[in-house]
Each structure stands twice: as structure tokens, then as C-alpha cells.
Length: 86
Ligand SMILES: [Zn+2]
Image (cartoon, rainbow, N blue to C red):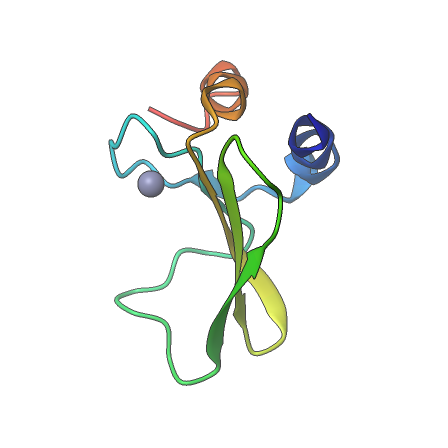
């Protein structure tokens, strides 16, 4: 449930949705999408949220750059409503 609040707070920080096309994906960029892979300053932090869903933060040079949200259709619906996900 709190993930929905995170999305609400982050709404102004969302640069663009992931748009990978996977129906289980509700991920979004909070920094401009990189051209190619992230460099050596990239790390992924898996947050323990418990089911349902998975939440990971991709941090690049100390900045949260991509928030991976998987298996959360409620979040995906919100992103679609905001025009940020396909
Ligand atoms: Zn995706």
C-alpha cells in the first residue's frame, strides 16, 4: 500500500516510465534515461517490501535514477493514468 504513496510523492520526480512493454513492469526513471548501460557508478538496492511486488532502486553516482517496481498492477495503472507507462 505504501508504494502508492511513494508514487504520489515521486510523481513530480518521474522523468519517464520504463515503457519496456512487460505487463508486470511499473518501473520509472527519476533521472534521464541513459544511452546504453549505466556505468561503474551504478548499484541496485533491493528494498524489502514483502509481497506483493518488488521494489529496487538503481542508484547512479549517488542519485536515485531508476525505480524498479515489478508485479504491482495498481502502480502500473497509476503510471498509465499519468501517461507515463504504456
Ligand atoms: Zn519495464
